[in-house]
Image (cartoon, rainbow, N blue to C red):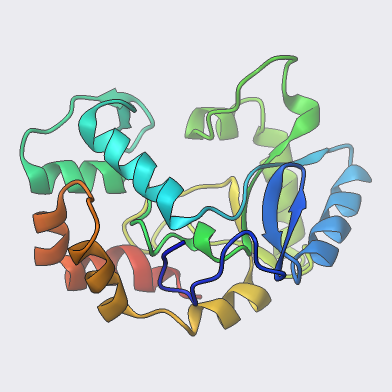
Length: 222
């Protein structure tokens, strides 16, 4: 496993598998408390993603670049694949983190939904339309609890006005844990990883890496 946050992986004793996803063990008691708190309000907190290794993030990135996975615009609607490498890079960045710098590498960040609101057999997409539709009451309650400091250290990271990544209401982070993991980040190591990795848009990434860090990485070190 490769990343810039300390080179841990899912086999590390620091992680535990819950609901089919690996999560930093330090996060578990707080996740369980949040789950219990939301259950008392009638919601079933459910994971849709947690720890994600470099290789998986790289696969997502490369498949979006190749057209195997669809690209979405800022509104969450399918868009045409740009021919220009730099434009393609920015199109992917609309909804996908840079491999090696994704907060999902930390083990402290979770994508969550309300299991009670999911129709049987429904495949969650994690889109703004879902947040404003079937999951709207859940996210409203989650916002209320965050505002009241009743989410046990969890907060949203990708919010309007912070960096250039589109807001993601479904993405929550246990900030006391993630702050410790972020201390290990190295942009120089990220550059080295890209230089030796078969990653789409490599030239554009290397040419713009410092600017990308200012817009897509550092604003989310909260």
